[in-house]
Image (tube, rainbow, N blue to C red; front, side):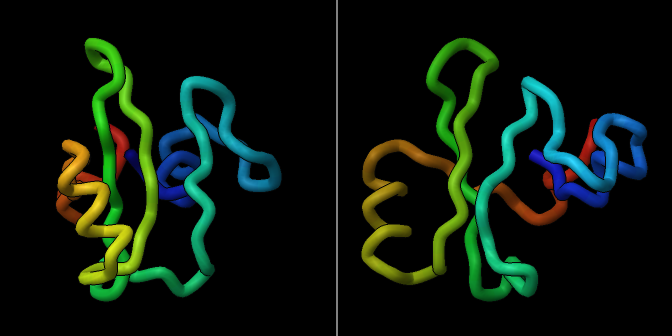
Length: 80
């Protein structure tokens, strides 16, 4: 997972369009911070993940954790 800015800086995505596959945008507010929001991921196939953004400590966050989703640490967000 990476931010749009990180993808642009790495030359993976243009700054005026969504990134190309295999990258997909997770919709969130422009001021979404990892203090209030959790970046979640779930492996659906070997090496293939889906992602979600949710508000921490809410029912949806707890539900995703119970369904096997993992919270992505802010230090793990970026282009490897």
